[in-house]
Image (cartoon, rainbow, N blue to C red; front, side):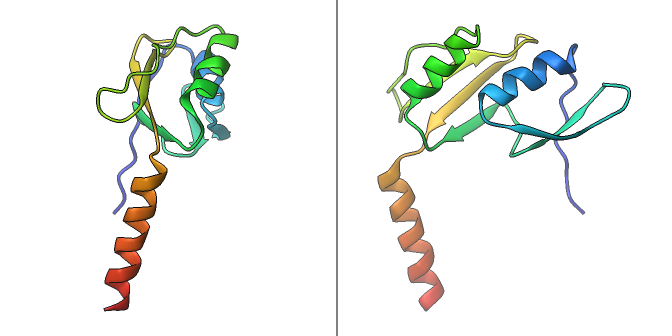
Length: 110
């Protein structure tokens, strides 16, 4: 069994445009325009391997109003999608990613 997260939106075109700015591409869509399958993980929380300033610039250029980069716990921004849902985008920490990889590799060698 596999769970599939679904979030209904008022306007699939606007939702797809917003998600494409974040780097998610549409694979397929319902013929009635009520939902779309996007390539990537769709949730209200994303991680990116690019610098957040690049993401912020791209979002602003597309007409969205992301927050400034927050460094309270890691580096992240928030932005409202076309339906008003708050989305958080975290910048992946290279050091933590490398540590995680090293831990997995070391555990696999045992």
